[in-house]
Amino acid sequence: MELLMQPVHLEKISYQFDCILIGENIKILKFGNLSTRSDNHQYQLTYIMNEKYLEEFNHSNVGAAIIHSSLKDKTVNFKSYLLTEINPETLFYTIFFEYTSRNYFKNLKKSSKNTSIISSSAIIHDSVIIGDNCIIMDNVVLMPNTIIGDRVTIKPNTTIGGDGFQVKEVDGIRKIVPHVGGVQVGNDVEIGSNVSIDKGLFGEFTTIGYETKIDNQVYIGHSSVIGNRSIIAGGSTIAGNVITEENIWVGLSASINQLLKIGKNSFIGANAAVIKSIKQYEKVVGVPSRVIGWVCDCRSPLRKNENEFICINCSKTYKLDVDLTMERI
Image 1 (cartoon, one colour):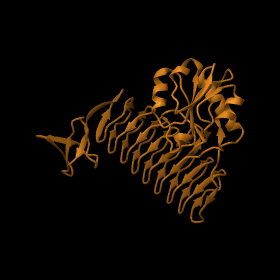
Image 2 (tube, rainbow, N blue to C red):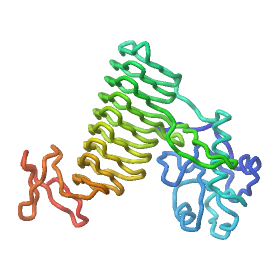
Image 3 (cartoon, rainbow, N blue to C red):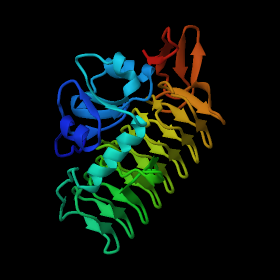
Image 4 (cartoon, one colour):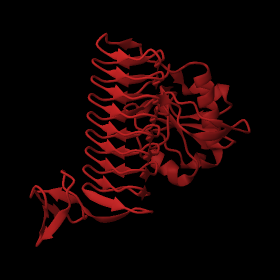
């Protein structure tokens, strides 16, 4: 799910921001980086800083890019470009700020079910959707474009849907980039006290999968996806654009760097600092984190037995593939 903007054609952007349009005059419905999650990449505007990323863009599904005029000879005839004489990243965020300030981005329609219990001190903004049989406790703040599923509990002083911490220099001033996405919380999720979950940056949704349990004082950054039935212990930090698969365990006060992928059924120990992606069933600990073994989907350790691995608790069997990825047999 993502929120799109009112369509703006590249020709209009090029005229307004003194660029040269090369290629088709496509309509733009969203902004984003090459790594931004989207079902509408063909209508996305991005920016490119060097030849390496230009080649990646040319082979991607992303429709248009802002590039420096020095890269003109590296363009291809089936893509669209905006050529500029200034820093492409600076121009990209200047354009993004302009269209957010002019309310070009769409919002959800507010709704809530009478079956939910919402504290009188909770602040529910416009463009928030709340499902059946939810409990929203004291001083919870639900910002615009937040979707709460059924049977969700949110404990006191939690904020869902605020802007993430993305800082860029625009017009010579450092600014927090406005976020135009949202947060989607699945069914049967429980969220503790003093938790902060940021909305998606470029229209995408930060997503909390069904039956996930989040302890107190947890931070989840913009555009992250938390898999179904995961457990995140107190004080943990998950940076922006992290993708986790289902049934992960994040220990007390652990931290996960941005743009990483965390495989299903993996186990991250208390106070671990995760700086690279984790494969499924891996158990990692330490600062920086390192793999010390594998765990079953019941989270008990696996013990090697000849060419197989066996859970010491439930006796499920596993094997290591050629790429050292653990698979259940």
